[in-house]
Length: 324
Image 1 (cartoon, rainbow, N blue to C red):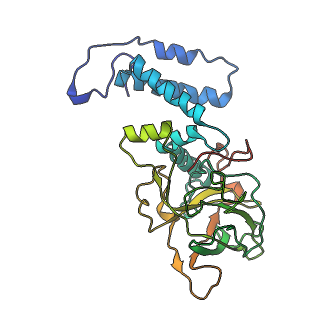
Image 2 (cartoon, helix red, strand yellow):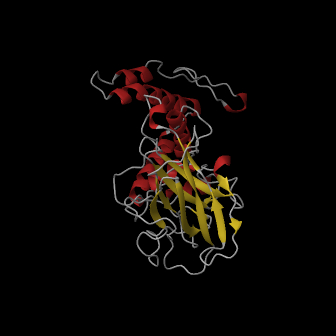
Image 3 (cartoon, helix red, strand yellow):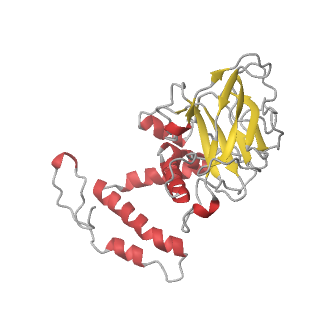
């Protein structure tokens, strides 16, 4: 940990003699008033300390600082009801995936046998159509790898089926676009909500997903190019699973054979969420099959200090935005 006076992280063993006001950072921290929001009062001192130490350790200059400010400002200018550039910036830096892991561990108390979470991403939409079990979420698409996905929603501890669990599912089309981005897709295409019966079973027709690039024509793309990184996300299907008496889970299911499975630009892939799409014979509706059981944690088992995060989708608008 750096001190206020002597920065560390000096490259190539170079010794620096510059020192900085040793009281400055504490003065900024102490400026927080007694009526501050409790959670902010708890976390902001640490954030301020780390930010100030980072600037001292790396001797950030005014031009560099203003470039960072402009990057965030530009992300705001690029954002609209179909694109959340700010969230994309955090995604490519791995921050959303990190916060997702923290939220999941807090909520499940580290129980590794529950279904792992993955980032919500910025493309969830509120109020997807409710569909009957066995129905399709695919409309207006004829040439694609149609898939029968099925399984159960169960209690992670007992394996008992969960009745009344809702599965909210969405994914891109074969062209790698979510329906908000694609004027050729019907509204709410490739989306649906399904509710389990007494046996906890679910089944529906979807597509075997495809990999796609996040938008890289804006500030996120500029940053990726500066870092010599690609913009690709591996093929995946998004889910939010909720059930009375259980902790909701936000997750993604990834195609094991996707070439980007080990190098996701958003760092969201987890081993337990990688799956195999198997060939399906003699089914007129689908050419592939995917079986997957979701395991939920009872709601009384999360820690009392659980923070709102990636396991709870925002309801701030009808359409979540961006591309992840």
